[in-house]
Amino acid sequence: MISFDEAKQRVLEQIGPIQAAPEEVPLRQALGRVLAQPVVAPAPVPNHDNSAMDGYAVRSADLTGQAVTLRVVAEVAAGARLLTPLQPGEAIRIMTGAPIPPGSDCVVMQEQAQRQGDWVTIPPGQQPGQHIRPAGEDIAAGSTIFPAGRRLSAADLGLLTALGRLTVPLYRPLRVALLSTGNELVESGTPLEPGQIYDSNRAALHGALRCLGVEVLDLGIVRDDRAALEAAFQRGGAEADAFISTGGVSVGDYDLVKEMLAKDGKIHFWQVSMKPGKPQAYGQLGKAHFFGLPGNPVSSLTVFLLIVRPALLKMMGALPEAPRQFQACFRGQWQKRHSRMEFLRGIAHFTPSEAQPDQAPWVEVTGAQGSGILTSLAKANVFIILPEGPVQLTDGQPVTVQWIDYV
Ligand code: AMP
Ligand code: MG
Image (cartoon, rainbow, N blue to C red; front, side, top):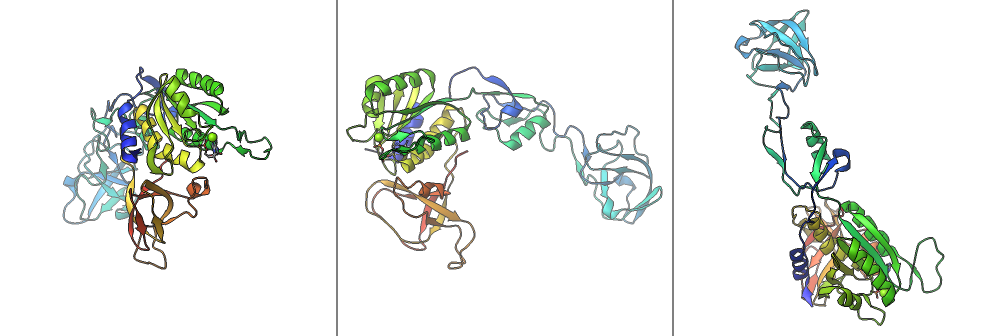
């Protein structure tokens, strides 16, 4: 059995960005997708010097050590432009975002100026260049604002629009086949016969895949039957970049996924020394990377979040990001006797508790931690990471936690 770190590393080593020509996509459809090429600014942002305040544009040469009264000769608002240069002794009423008039090199805040009719009195203490946002202060012309591999955020879409972009070159969306195995599974909406359960794994994984913005090829529920599995495997292996199944990778009599993967594809490894999530298989099926996840609901989603998600992001072309881990103060007691690495589901709190007012962030387990208890993961915002070997956690002990990232 290989360690969690080795499993993750071996998966990431096998995987590279999908090879396809970039597609030019309108910005409104680009959120969460990955740039296939860097973006270089064709022009500065902002593209003209402009006022950061409502006030008066003046010449700093006119300002002496004392209060100075200037004649207000014009007004300029955002969207307008003045061409006549400011002359000595003059001021221009200016609004936030308006271009700085030629000849002016200083903006005085309206709150500091005293206006009377056509005249304005400026108190001493103004600095040349103040309250002016120079052209290019945000983005210099010719600079690379995003490298290839950037996953576009909402702020990124704003920046790209500020640059005048309408479209961006992106990796094509990833196609991921998804199925559940198990004779006990039924689609929600159907009444349950004794012994049956609803297919919660596929619902959770479908949601997790949608968070990544991939295209899901939903292959439904497949019975624990060699022919049925083979048919589904053939379709997913031919059409998808990645293939995710749940259930059937353990050692029971009806656990056929591993057997069929070995027959129709290739197994790179099976079983990982982690809890939850020991029974899992990674391999290749047709042109798809195959992730055979455990059947237990907590296990399948945990393995997805910790191993499959980083792998899919790499396939999507995204630059690698370290898992968001930090130290927190453990509250409660926990004893681990088994040797596997464990990912307890926890709730991290960022404000101190009454009991320990000087300790934050602190973390507690979400309650019972069985791998079938999906509420343990639903309530959690972090995994509490317990290393291999026996661990005894007591109140107040520091622990490493990892933020649960879906998006
Ligand atoms: P397996 O690995 O197939 O033996 O499944 C382990 C446990 O997970 C069993 O209790 C299954 O009933 C349960 N399980 C398997 N697949 C699902 C699923 N799609 N949704 C909910 N529970 C499941
Ligand atoms: Mg099963």
